Structure formats: C-alpha cells, structure tokens
Length: 235
Image (cartoon, rainbow, N blue to C red):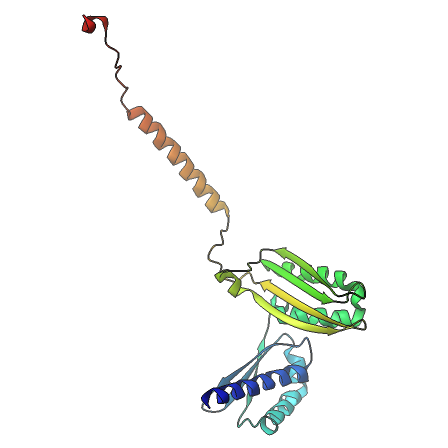
C-alpha cells in the first residue's frame, strides 16, 4: 500500500509539472521544481523569459494558481520565478528552441539550425555540446544526425554534471526527436587539467632543477677503479 501511495504521489507531481510547462508554452520553461513546506507548496519555475511567464500584473500566475488549487487540489500553492541568466547553456531551452525552429522553417534546414545553435552554445562558454536529431529530416526515411563540438564526457562521474534534455518537433514529414547535452563551464570535472602560463613556468622550473640535480650527482660520483692487474702484481 505504501508503494502505491508513493507511485500515485509521483504521478500527480509529474502531471503538475507537465501542465505548467504546456500551459506556459514550449521554449519558455526549463525546469519545474516542487518543494513542500509547512505553509504550503512552493513551485519554482526556471525560465529565461520571466515577463512572459508572469504576465501583465501577474495575470498568468494568478490563473495558474487557481488551476493548481481547483484541478490538482493543492492547498496553498506559491509560484516563484527563477530567472536563467544564460539560456544558451540550458539544455532544455536549447532543445525547445531547436524544435520551434524546425516547425517554423521546416526540416530541410535542420543542418543550418543545428550548426547555428552549436556556435551559440560554444560562444556562451560551454566546454562541449552534442545535438542529436532523429526523424524524417532529409528524406522519407528516418535517420539520426549528430552534431558535436568541444569536450563532452559520456561515462564516469564527469558524465553526471552534463546537462541533458529532450524535446519533440512536429513537422509536416513527421515527428523529429531532439536530444541536447551541454557541459557548462562552471561544471566541476576532477580529471580536467587547465594549461595556464603559471603551470608552464612551473614545469620549466622543475625541468631545470632536475637537470641541475643530475649534473651535481655526476660530479660527486667517484671514478671506478680498474680491475685489471698490473704486470708487477702478476709477478
């Protein structure tokens, strides 16, 4: 019984998140988090366009709060806006923007859209990025196209810090699946080595010190005595 309650609770939470994303529109919301407090439910909406989400004098927020109370039976929902300062480094916003571009310009220009987005992501300072498009893009046969640039870890602990997201584009030939992975410049990578001028200078100093130490050892090392016996010792 306890497991069923947990599953039902998670289903309701997922339904709330999906409703908020769909009601606010594709490309406006990145993530929706729900925190439960003694006062009520705190719903944090991460977006790069807070003005469009809030609406004029908070009309959209009030409307959304009323739906959450009536349809989803939340006692005291409180919606907060978390503004995303760098939308080009958010995988969900990038995936949604690619989906909107494919729906607007058509799937034949998918390479232009993908390469332009790659330049924007890397220009924002990302360490690496990958875009995968799957569907009937250049022809009637479905195919997967991969666009990547920079450093992107696929396995290990470093892969956990990669921001990944999915989106769907409804084009005339059919549905196109979009996967985006971005490695933020602020991500902590344990095996990353930054080659700076101070590091190069330190390596040169260590190399010179090692060379001097080797020369000093050669100078201090005594000469080997000859083991050959002289003619007098033989007699």
